[in-house]
View (cartoon, rainbow over the protein chains, first blue to last red):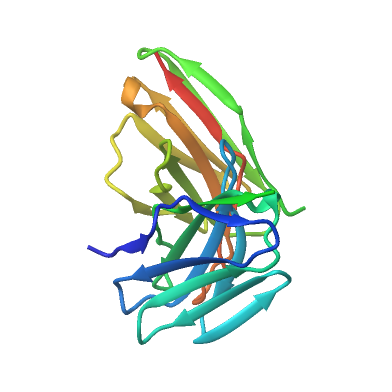
Length: 110
Length: 114
C-alpha cells in the first residue's frame, strides 16, 4: 500500500512565526512531490512542487525534500491568519496517479 | 486562461435521477481527472483521461460514467446514486510528460444525494 503520512494537527502558530509542516511517503519510486493548500469548503490549490533533493523557495514558502529519508516538508515564514487552511502533501511516481496525504490543519493566531 | 471551470457548483439529486457534472479547461492540458472528496478526507482518484482516452479507472461503481468529448471538456454522468455518494467532486487537469508538475483543480461540485 503506497502511503503519504501527515500529522492531522491542528498545528497552531502565532502570526509572524514559522509554520513547519511535515510529510513522509512510503513509495521509493516517488518522483514528484507537491503541497496543496485547501481552505474549508474550497478546492485544493497547488502552492509548491519539488522533485530534487534539497530546498526550493517561493516567496514565504520553502519546500524541502530528502529522498533518502522519504521526507518532505513545507515551511511558511511570517505566517499570516490567511495561511490558516489544510495543507495536503502529495506524491506521484511520474505517471498520472497522485497520492494525497490526509492533510495537516494549520491555524495562525492573530 | 489558467482556470478549470466546473458546473454546477451545487447539485441535489434523488437516487433515481440522472445528472451530469461538467468540467472545462483551456490551458492545453492533455490529462484530466475526476476526484471525489469527503469531508476532512483527502481527494480520492476516480478517473484519469490522457489525450481524451480513459487511462485509469479506480474501480469506480458503474453508476459513475466519465466522458471526454474533446481535449478541453470532461463530463461525469451520474445515475442511480446512493446517499453515500454525497461529496465534493473535483475536476483537475495537468500537463502530460515524464514529470508531473501538479494539478490545477476546478472549484468543485458539491453533490448531495437524497
